[in-house]
Image 1: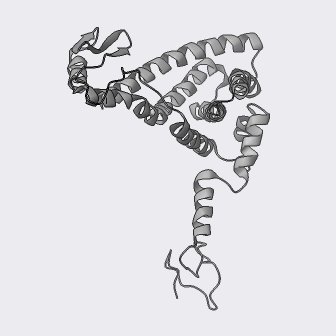
Image 2 (image 1 turned 180 degrees about the vertical axis):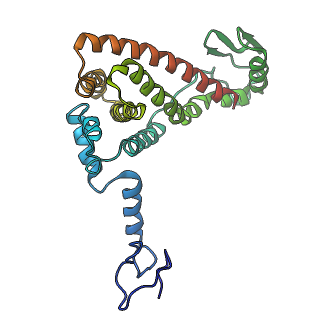
Image 3 (image 1 turned 45 degrees about the vertical axis):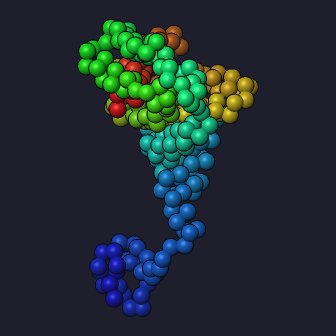
Length: 282
C-alpha cells in the first residue's frame, strides 16, 4: 500500500499519517463541516490567531509590526494574510450596504428626452447637455471613447450612468493594491536612516491598512457615534503606531507624516482618477 499523495510505501500495520509527507492515509470524502473548517483556516484564519492578532492590532498600535520584526511570526496572522482577510470582508460588506449614486435626471419610461450628464475628470470634463455631447480639456481619444459610450438612447444612457458607482466600488480593491506599496515606499524614503528593508516598511503598511479597513467597516454601520469614533481612531492609531515602530521624536514625526500625507494624497488622486477612467472606458 502506498501513500496517495507522495507514493511512498506505507508501513504495516498502516499508520494514520504518512511518515514521508504527513498526509492522512485513510482518505474519505470531506464533510460539509470539514470543508467549512478548511475555508476558515485557509482564508479567514478562524483557528484563534486572527482574533489574537486583531486584539493586539486594536489594543496597542504598532505592536503587531514590532513583534513581527522581532521574529515572533507564528503566534499571529502573517501581515499579508491579515490584510487580505480584513480587506476582502470589508469590501464585500461595502458592496452589500454601500451605494454610490450618480445623479441622472429621472425620466419616465416612455421619455425620449436625453438626460443631462456631467463627468469631471481631473482638469477636464465631458458629458451630455440638452442632447449634445461635449468634451473639454481631455485627450481626443478619450473624448471619442466617451462619446461612443454616452451617445445612447435616453433610458440606456440613464442605466449606463447609474451603474458607475457600483462598478467603481468593484474596482476599489484593485486600486488599494497600488496605493499600499506606494505608502510603503514613502515610509522607506521618510525613514531611510532606519536602514530597514522595503519589505519591513511594507509589513507596517499592511498592518496599518488592515486597521484602516476595520475602521471603514465600522463607518458602514451608519451610526453617527461609531463613525465619529472610527474617524478619530484613524489618525490617532497611525500616529501612535509610527511612534512605537520607528521611535522618532514627535516634531520630526509630524514633518514626516506631513510629507508622507502629501505624497500619498497625490498617489490617491492619480489612482482614483485612473480608476474612474477605467470604470468609464472599460
